[in-house]
Image (cartoon, rainbow, N blue to C red; front, side):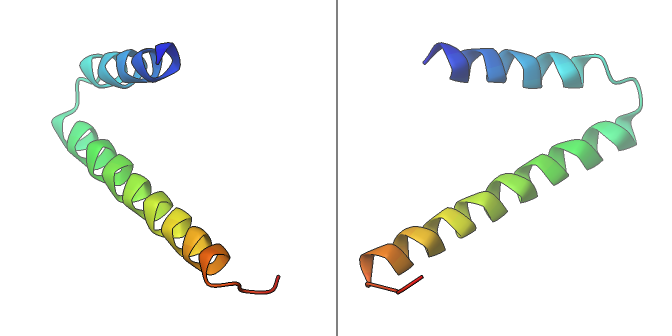
Length: 55
């Protein structure tokens, strides 16, 4: 739990330091897209493991 709180604090502080509004919006959008991509990959991997896919 401590690691998640530290990552949250790091994420929040990183965006507080940005002075450019465009950069802030762009990086927030890209972080959300990256997180969603990671979740899709993890879902596909678990699905393949659950259905007996041979590696």
